[in-house]
Each structure stands twice: as C-alpha cells, then as structure tokens.
Image 1 (cartoon, rainbow over the protein chains, first blue to last red):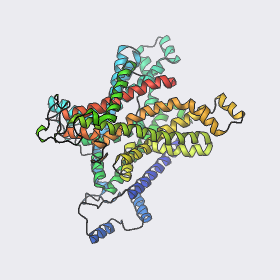
Image 2: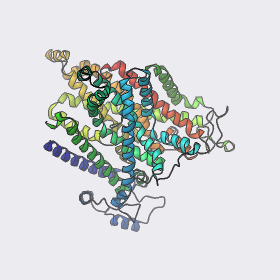
Image 3: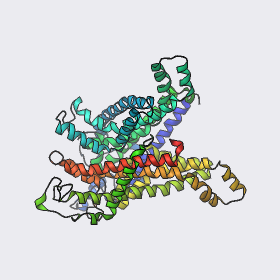
Image 4: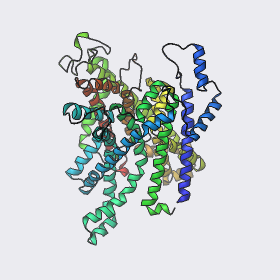
Length: 305
Length: 281
C-alpha cells in the first residue's frame, strides 16, 4: 500500500511538471504579448518592462527560473496587479473558491444519494422514470444558464435572496446549487445504475433470505458496495467543479480564483494564468491521490495488491 | 471532452422523436438562416429597441434593435459547426491513436496510454483556454483547440475495443489465413468497434457545444464579430444576462436554444447507445 501511494505521489509530481512545462510553452507560443495595447509603448519603456520581468533572457533561462520559483512556492509577479505577486493573489482567492467547491460537493452528494437510492429501489417505476428524467435535465442544463435562471427567479422575481454578494451564508446558497446541480444529477444516475446491479447480486438475496432488516440490507450491503463507482468518478467530478467554478464565480460575481483566471486570460497576465493553472492541477492531483487512499480504505482487495 | 461527464443511465426513449425533430430544425436553421428570416443579421432598427416578442419580431429585439430570432438562427451555425467539427476532429485523431496503441501493444501501448491518462486527468476547459490563446479566438482556432482536448475519449474507447476484438476467433483465423494487418483492421476490427465509437461521437457533440457556449458566455470564446458565422448562443446569453432584470426575453430564447439542443443530443446519445452498444445498458 505504501509503495503504491509513493508511486502515485511521484506520478502526481510528474503531472505537475508536465503541466508547468506545457503551460510555459503554450504561453510563449501565443501570438501577442502582455504589453500589447491600443497605444504602442515607446521601445525604451518596453525594453525596461521586459528587463524587469526577465523577458529579455533566453527561453531556457526563463524556464529554469520559473521552475525554481515553483519549487520555492513563488509563482512570480503579476503583470496586471502591480502591488501583489501571483502567490499572494492565489492565497487571497483560493479559500473562497475552495469553500464554494466544498459546499457544492456536499450538496451534490447530499441530494444524489437519496435520489439514486429511490430510483434504484423502485426500479422501472414512475419514481424511477421521474428521477431519470430530472437527472437528464440536470446534466444537460449548462451551469451559466442555471445560474442566470436562479438569479432571475429567486432573487429578482421572488426577492428571497440577493444575488451578486458574497458576505454571509445566504449568499452562498444559489452559487452552491448552480455549481453542484450537474454533479448531483450525474452522481444520482451513476448511483442508480450501480445500485440496480448490486440489488441483483447473490449476497443481497442471501442477506434478505436470512431475514435481515431491509434498512440493514440497503445500508450494509447495497450502499457500501456502490461507493466504489462513486469514488472512481470523484477525480473527473472535481475537475468539472473546478471549471464550473470559473463560470459560477463569474455569474455571481464571487471574488474567487476562477474569476481572476478569466480576467488574467483577457489581460494576458501570463504569470497569473500559469499560477492558477498549476494550482488547479495540484488540487486535482491531490484529490486523485486522496481517492486512491480512500480506495484502499474502502476496498481491502486493493490494499493487498 | 476528457473529463466531461456523460449520462450513464438508460434512455428516455419515448422522447426520441421529439429530440430528433428538434435537432433537424436546428440543423435546418443553421443551413438556411438567411432565408428563414427577413431581417439582416446585422440590421439595426433604432426605433425598435428592446421590444418584447411580437408578430413582427417573434423573439423580440435586443438593445441595439436587432431581431433576436435572426441572431438565434445564425447562432445555430456556430453551435452546429463547432459540435460536428470538434467531434469529427477528435474522432479522427483519437480513433487512429487508439487503434495504433491497441495494435502495437506492449511498451508502445503503455507509453501512448500514459499520455492519454495525462490529458484525461486535467480539467479540459483549462487546457482549452490555454490552447485558444495560441490558436486565436476564431472558429478555426476553436475547432483545433477543442479537437485537441477531446480526442482522448476516442483513444481510450478505440484501444479498449481493439484489445477485445483482437481476441475474437475470426480475427485469429484471419491472421492464420495470412491476411495483412491493414486488411484485418479495416475489414474485421473497425466494423466491430464502430458502435461504441458512434456513441462516443454523439456524446462529444453536446460537450463541444457546451464548452463553446460557456467560453463565449464568460467572454473568452470566439471573438470575431465580422464573420459570416454569426454570434454564438453563449454570447447572446451573455448579452441577455446583463439586461435580465428588465428584459428577460433577450436571455430566454438563446438560453432555451442551448439547453434544448444539448438535451436532445444527450437523449439521442442514450437512445443510440441502447441500440448500438447494448452491453453498456
């Protein structure tokens, strides 16, 4: 197990390095520079700017400087926000995004389990069909449309909540639903199909035959065995949440990392783009690592390998 | 899309005809947009700003007095082109890659699939945004960038299917009869793996449409106002979003167009999967 985790850890580091290199290369290939503007800068000023940000050095030197910076946790200066470095900006905005992402995961898990269980238990009934239909709707509804719809209905028409604020718990409700809806729909559908399979297994029949209470059959035998497929999709699911957070933070004007990423792309603030990309990758790699650990915890067969 | 989520459940079959019909209308709208509408795509009417839907303007007009129906019809061009184009590019790259990996086997296979794993694990939107910085924010650059991101799904499916198909008796007998590799791939393996690939294709189209409209919505999608392609539905939703409080009709129609198109494609994908790939049911 420890050997496996060590292997995974090294694999994660390689992914991070690959992404850092890929981002660096892509942004150097991109046409146009960060200091292009409507009015052309005088050449002396441009030269000074490039010297300040080491852009006049050979590419290999810039690349090595960048990698060394990452190793020290220094992601470089931002071209746009002159008073703050990239590391500082990320440290300021990451907690907000992480909170939103965490709430969305809790929301998704919280509503997908009852729905998936209900649908699988009453398989092929009207309830099942209804759940299936809602799940298909949820998967097909883009989060920016859901967000706009919620703002229009709940905030503008009903006036129950206010949109465009991020100061207390009630302002987190609509963003959480918007971000968590698609994962919830996806998880519910996944749980349903995995539970339907489990309910047909011999050990469930045995458990019922020996007179176990139905609630115990569901909790101990059916649900416990359906956790593995849920864990398997946690990685892609977190990736979906990360990209979803760009949009949700944009729609609800939440001061998170995703919104800074979008403005960094429009501003061509390369160090900020690279920094946020790396942090996103690190989160994803970390989440996958955690999933591997949990795998071993839930399924003893994997631990012994 | 690499990490895009596809619905794993069974189809909602009785809705299939409606979905197919709706998609047909959208495709027709994309092709015939200029003839459907009597208004010019860039036509401004200063006296008709922000009008609600009426018999003259079925979807109303926007803040510059442009006919919204015309804009939505032209928007279908962007979505359909991006959806089909991306899916085809991804299909070509991914299937070829997967076939080679599956056929070479051994170290080749291992190395090639490592690259696929790397792509698969990353948030596709992120790579996509980075690629679009390189290829530019026009429809061609967008197609290349989206295609480069979404091929991995095809590579995985194709490789898995090849590994399975190689074990079939008729493939072995073809080997024994001395058939060339090329002949075995084209005549024996491809026809057997085409089902799952078509299903993957159907799911890639809505993923691409979703990615494109999302990027356009947050303002980093296609930025090419003078092209004959028209404006993306995502941009139209963005326009409507700003005026949502007072003029909800401007956001309602393009948003409905995106939602219904993606929904129809997903339901169609489920239906096709049930027919072509019954094992996954």
